[in-house]
Every structure is written in structure tokens, then in C-alpha cells.
Image (cartoon, rainbow, N blue to C red; front, side):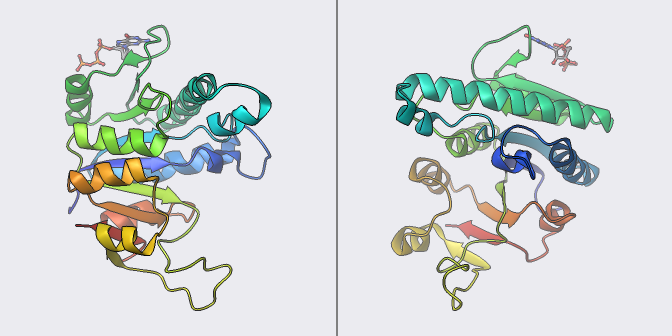
Length: 235
Ligand code: GTP
């Protein structure tokens, strides 16, 4: 197996499924089933999930909530999603541990890096909630940071598109999908992969990113089996 330890970044928005808001059970179950296939390959799996289906810090500023307050509300939203995912994984019999960047010990463990690594070594899926615990950072940045801290081999960014394109494929018919692209090319071409804070953390720490379509059943396992799906970003 090419990747021994992975950090999977999941979108909170995808949890809405066909709803306008919140968590659709079918969507969480889909994530849990994909994660089960990854666990079955014996890969060590850590997860960061966004919170955009419940609350978006940035948008809240438009409603008169200041940015910092909004960002903390967003961090709490990621905990709700993490708990939903944890419940679904446990229903499938997969051992999990949820660790939060903001202490809430009645609900989950605090994030302690060494402990997170130990959980992974014991085959537990570790979910990192509450982002980095700081405002102004996205959950993509939390994913990059945690991935580096636990020395993951790769970040797998599960999205609704099947990779990185040279232009918006919905607007430009000539847009082509990259199989592989370097960090520098992404900068030069101004392509959207992650926000720049998250992206730069990966580049500087030589942590490859794979962007792939997580909504398609079986794709996570395909990525782990090194099938050429999605786009690999590397140095
Ligand atoms: P090992 O010591 O490696 O076996 O790990 P473990 O997680 O099984 O041990 P521990 O006895 O620390 O945890 C047992 C359960 O309690 C697990 O489900 C943990 O997630 C949970 N747990 C541990 N610490 C905390 C905490 O601070 N708050 C909450 N809410 N749960 C915790």
C-alpha cells in the first residue's frame, strides 16, 4: 500500500446531501462507508471535516456577527459534523476517537498529538474537530496542520469534482484535468486547490495533496490503491 497514514479532508457542505442545511443521514453514511474501505486496506486514517453545512464564519459577518465570533461558531459546527461522522463509523463497527482543538472534555478528547498518533497506531480512526482552534484559519488549514503534525503521507481532499482543472470545466469546454501538477504550477496558474495558508503549509512541508471526487462510491479505495483518479499535487 502506497500510503500508510492518510489525512482525509471532507467537506461539511456535502453532508447536506439534498437538503438546504444540516446533516442528511445518507450523506454521513456514505462517508462512513468510504472510510470503512480505507480502514480495510490497513491504512491509518485521520479525518478533518468542515462545518459549512451548519455555519460559515465568513458569511456570518454579513449578519453583524464579528469575524472572530463567527469563526468560533464555525469551529463548533465542525464538532457537530465530527460527532455525526463518529456515530456513523461506530455503527459500522469502526473504532474512532474524536479530538477537539478546543477543549470540551465532556464530549471528546482534547487534541494531544502524541495521543492522536497512538490512536492511529492502534487502528482507530481519529477525527480532528474544531479546526485549528483559532479564528482566521480554515478547516483546510486545520487539515494541513494536523496532517503534518501526525506525519501523514498524504492529504486526500474529497470534493465534488474529480480533480484540478486548467479552467472551470462547467464554463470552459477545453478545460483539462491534471493527473499530476506541482505546487509551483498551481501558484503560477492561480488554480484553486485549497486556500493559500493551507496550500503553503503543504508545499513547505512536502506533503502531497490528492484532490478527488469523494461522492463517487469506491473512490477513496481507488485512490489508496493508486489508481489514477483525481489530481496529485506535489513538489
Ligand atoms: P488507550 O489508552 O490507548 O487504550 O486509548 P483509549 O482512548 O481507549 O483510552 P482511554 O481510557 O483514555 O479512553 C477511553 C474512552 O474515553 C475513549 O472512548 C476516549 O475517546 C474517551 N476519552 C478519553 N479522554 C477523554 C476526554 O478527555 N473526554 C471525553 N469526553 N472522552 C475521553
